[in-house]
Amino acid sequence: MSTSPAPATTPSLYNKNNPFKAKITENRFLTKPGSAKETRHFIINIAESGLSYLPGYSLGVFAQNPPEIVDELLTKLQIQPDTQLPLKAGAEPKAIRDLLLNNFTLNRTNKKFIKGILDKLPEGAKKEALSVIVSSDEQLDEYAFTRDYIDILNDYPEITISATELLPLLSPSNPRLYSIASSNAKHKDEVHLTVAVVRYETHGRAKKGLCSGWLADDTQLSSTEVPVFLAASKHFKLPDNPDADIIMVGPGTGIAPFRAFLEQREMDGAKGRNWLFFGDQKKSTDFLYEEEFAAWQASGLLTKMDTAFSRDQGVKIYVQDRMRENGPELWAWIQKGAYFYVCGDAKRMAKDVHQALINIAIADGGLEQDQAEEYVNKTLMKDEHRYLRDVY
Image (cartoon, rainbow, N blue to C red; front, top):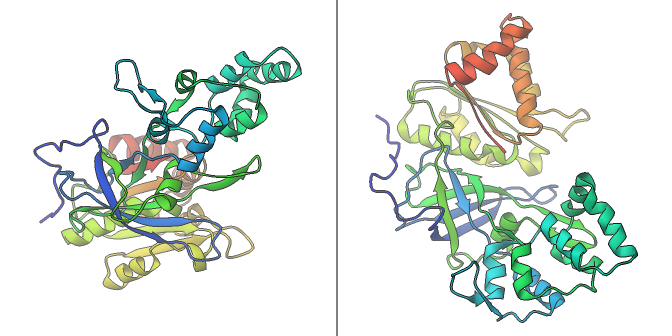
């Protein structure tokens, strides 16, 4: 009998508009020293929230901007941190420092701010040069992409912007959604996340992802309040039948929901077979949750696991290559009713995996090109709902 947690019959008081103030109880590296990446495992405590989730759900997190970025921005604009302003008309005024910490995205500029700078520039060469950039959508996108507000002010130090002028020029902060990496049945009061911490340098300044950087660097265990909410998934979920087989393709942090799937199937005593494709750069430094997957293989829960570590040999190998190598067996699983799941990068990986599945239908299923495309795109995805994706 399934032990899957049903969503709360009495809705929780907490949602996107009223997030729960959770606490982080674990923040540990998943990648090892020498990795080109920084991936961490976070445990978020949601006890007393009334929140309940299923495998396939995501957790929304509202992040704070780094205090040093807020302070530098205010200093550059010569705005006092305790200047009182309402976030919107009719709202109770708050200190602008608090508003900038919590309500706006400061790690990347926007077109509105750049155009505001243009309007304030005196006539001359600098205004003419920026006018050329602003007049071209392509150039404006390129200019804005690598800059934050401080970079812009470094380019135009002569500009002054008042506190009341500043807020309407900024982009509001939006939550970051992370695929949940745990089963609620196994971890009653916890949500586990698999987070790639974004760090980079542009224009001579070190920068980081708004949410991943905040979680990694600026939160204290069991202390910092982390505003969170649950985002349900109607389609990306385990089969209703626990005896159904599943095939999971999740390179990098795309592994997150499949860790949740496996925990849930373990708790349910599900009889269906489980096949996982995982990939990253190097086995020695980037094999996320290696020990857990080894234990599940040993117990028999994880029927089959194929890995693709792209930098471990001269020719790069990816999950779609492992799929093609296992084409006959993968096709046999699908013909016996297996569900096929993909999680991760939408731009390249998901497209390559999709094409690999079509190629397998041709090479190992004996279908013609148009038949294979119709089978994958229509039969599996739309008619039978056995091909499910969580891509971003």
